Figure 1 (cartoon, rainbow, N blue to C red):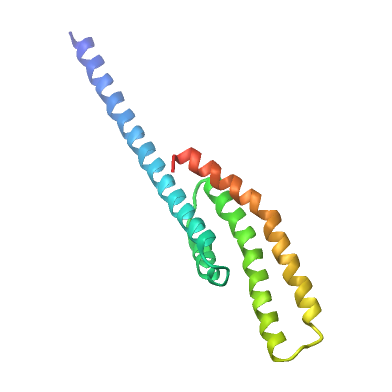
Figure 2: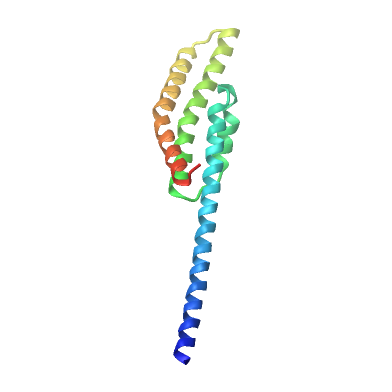
Length: 141
């Protein structure tokens, strides 16, 4: 009889232990999903913003925490892509303002730099899109 009691107590302890591990795992998954959701929401806001309004959501994306490899990679890839895009847009705006005021010698260099930034953004965007797709599938978002 004592063996049965010890066995039952042991089983109960294991069950409680597994429940704690399971709960901890569920909490971790929930936190990971929350981070992924936040990052995907800001990336979507960044996409939807007018070109001259992308700097603020880009800075917000940079400030978000991430803890999983996939989420951090999505964040990093999209920051790289949109950073080039935003810099190219900002250069274009400065160039346009200068052309309206008075032409200068550095406009050709600015135009070249603007085009390079925009092309780098285009080149980096597929990596951003791929990681976004990975996150959406993983967390069913």
